[in-house]
View 1 (cartoon, rainbow, N blue to C red):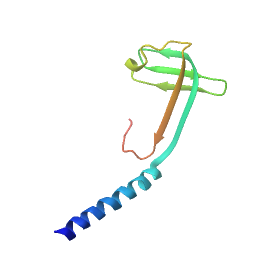
View 2: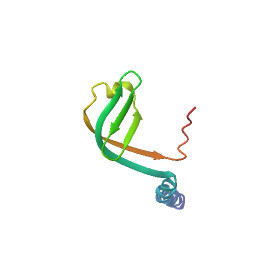
View 3: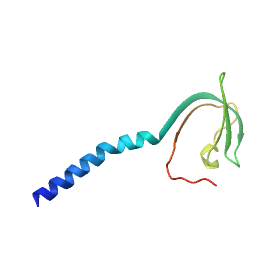
View 4: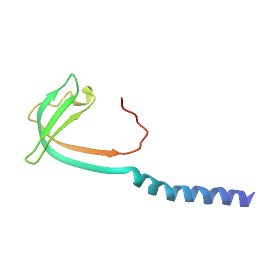
Length: 89
């Protein structure tokens, strides 16, 4: 029984060490920026953020941006992963 428990514990340890390596293969990017809200559509959840370098158009659940308005200064953080199993149609 002790050998079995040691085998299971060793397997769990190996899996926990391998998981970050496997996840790193799918991770592709992270970005954050500060900017001004230059356009907002509260009904659709669309938001445009602009600074001196870039304009970014994003989509959020409408309820999450209900208190934002044009001219607000915000920080946007975006990251994406490839191969997460999420399917968009």
